Amino acid sequence: MQQEERSRLARKEITEAALKLFSHQGYRGTSIRDIAREAGVSTGNVYHHFPDKETLFRALLDDYWAALEKPDHPINRALAAGAFPNDLEALGRAARESVEIYRPYVALIYVDVVEFEGEHIKKFYATMAQRFERFLVQHGELELEKKLQPGIAPLSAIMLTSRIFLNYFAVEVLFNVPNHFGKESEDVIGEIADILRRGMLRASKPAREERLPALPLPAARH
Image (tube, rainbow, N blue to C red; front, side, top):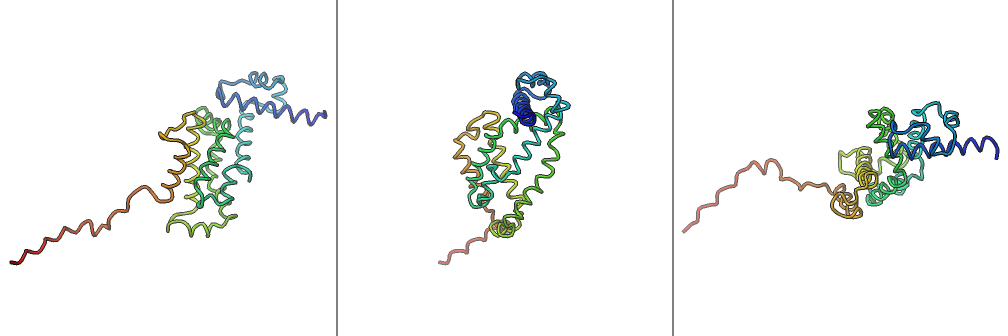
């Protein structure tokens, strides 16, 4: 095996070990020695690839951000297939699949919030709208706008829908709390999709109609 291939494999083993440990026991609860032991390499080998522990932590988050941009990411596949707004249930299932596949990486977001006050993920969330905007440009924002209520921005609508489903399944998968809406997840997907399509409030009476007092009935004639 050539040196370049050995180096690539060692780096892969190190990042996989770090991901497992960081996502289970946090950043400060994990040492370089722990990572080296889990990866089956020397501490010197870890430092050869990563100058310090925080650089390794950032590299894992960068891997996750890169995965979110790929066309084969479950949510990207669903969006490209027209799940929004034509099949919101499919988008919900894609959100579940993405959290299941990338569970350890999602856990790193919470580690960053607790231990770094979100220092490493701020840029990612600050540029989230730009990434969805690029998707809308590629897949016809004007056509999507025709399918939404007047005044509803496609960008806000698609971001809100995605975040609702992702947050629901983060609780179910990451925190291991199944059926936390008191019903099966598939039922919740359908219910959320229905609420997003139809809204949750009854249409109120026009304000003028509500203010007008009821007219008295005419007196009966004998």
